[in-house]
Length: 163
Image (cartoon, rainbow, N blue to C red; front, side, top):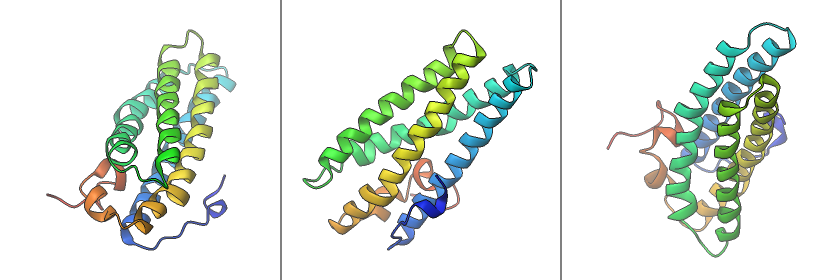
């Protein structure tokens, strides 16, 4: 999926910031996954690339998912967004399981399969959030700037407001 595949309504700066940070996370996830798979395909040692991928997953992607769970999927359920939020929480549990699999797989190929699945799942989840959930919350009158603006895990370090 390319960025042009999602037609995101960016009706506020906070939606634009969240979408931009999602794009950044996705790019970094894809680059690290491709480096890991490329090392396997080349027949060279893949451990350095795997460690770099795992470090990114543990220090950036997982904290992003955890903050989303706390802020969006638990605290901000509306009648309209409740079913989507619950489904996205299930996706976050699967993201965590795939991260564990990348880290604990006994062969590089098993880790690569999990990493590839993680990229696909993140693509789906990002699109759901950017195209459906965040605009629906904003349309329901929720102040996303107040809710998300203080969390660099959601909007990136340069956009996050300091409390």
